Length: 302
Image (tube, rainbow, N blue to C red):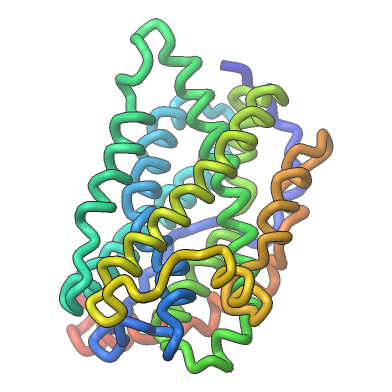
């Protein structure tokens, strides 16, 4: 393993997990009122993230012993704490959706297979363990580039507020998105510290983008087909996506396509992406933090 540092100056404070609490009892199945397409396209995040973020943590635990930069090691540990918290929060949404008659288990089982088996520890033989760790770190860095782009988008997606979107769901998405912007550099810095090969960075990005698009399209189609209210009457069509993107309810195709060439620039660093101040400002006012503090007071600070 190489140990390249050369990182830009650190922004903000040390990355750390935060305790939050979301109450889902009043959140409707179509949390964007009258818009099951936008609801379920964004709901695909709940399908992908619990298994995906547990996998991130698993891979980073394997990389941690090789990290020689103490600040980066602390950031990696903070990243792992945040991602573990995200996985639990999104898992709770899946449980709420099941209570509303939408069982996501068949799709989630495929996602778990993808991360735990296809990208698992035993995909490659033991002698290729170092190579496989670097490959997976590069994949995570590429995924984290997209999550930072999406995190920055959701912080600014006022058309969802105007549409009357459920405030608890918006808080979950914005709290999570803000932390994605906050820790946007960690996966990339870890990859650069332990490898940094441009060919691997480029190749994994060019693979990751199309795979994510495929998962989102299939996840949206699955949710619309299983939705007990629309019962398949709304289809996962590109025309629906483009219309909702023009309305500002989902990210534009242009913003997602252009994210890849930015990442592929030789001088790229994730600190160039997103608005860190806006992210930290949102974290400071997130209702989920206040609700957790209130919950702790009611339990006598247990």
